[in-house]
Image: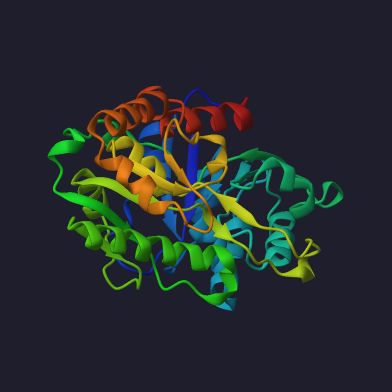
Length: 339
């Protein structure tokens, strides 16, 4: 590895601006955290692939948005042109976040692109099912859907008792193909809004995708809220044609759970593993998957001492510790692939 290594981050974005905060950080955290020069290429617009060859990068990071380009003929063409221009010596890292969609196509492309390291949000027990040993010429590393950036770590947070919103939540109009998890994503918001209305508390909840929050707007809402409800990201349905058992459920911690920990917002979450980061009863108040105890769980957010102790503990163990920061994970990935 050169004394000052060079990295190229490939992403694909032609949608809304600004990006959602966690997406922006996932792409551009490499600028401040990579120990060398970092250049970014949006393959969603025309580009000259020879520029990549001339740059001769030590590391190429293929973001989830770039991998999602494979769903269209034009997008796949752009992704191939970019990766074909990568010099053979460059180390190639890919980070998909949509492994429950078009899995066989993803598998095929990872082999075609000669990926060296795959960053996956999947639970390790699923790795051999999703990426069979004989079909993966790449190493696997567990990767969260998001990490904590320096700006988020510096967020000031007032005491919970001084916050004006009792509970907040956002969800999109979840499609049927997400299965039970899609239904829970919507229902948990509706139940939280009903709890607030019954007790005369203020809520800021939307489950139809029409009140989207981009940039720092979601962080500001969390900072004004005593509690936030939620569930793991993922899907309860996968395509059996990919060779996975029909009962396979793909779940992972959502970026918003780290954001809530950073803003010291009391989390009421459907019980789950949360990528091994959040511990039930310690970092969040768990509720059963049928939501039968969600009212009692939300009532705990009104207990100043109990709620404040939980959010302070989550902040100390998850945020202040630095274990889940972009600086930590970029350094570890760099060391792993460029050692």
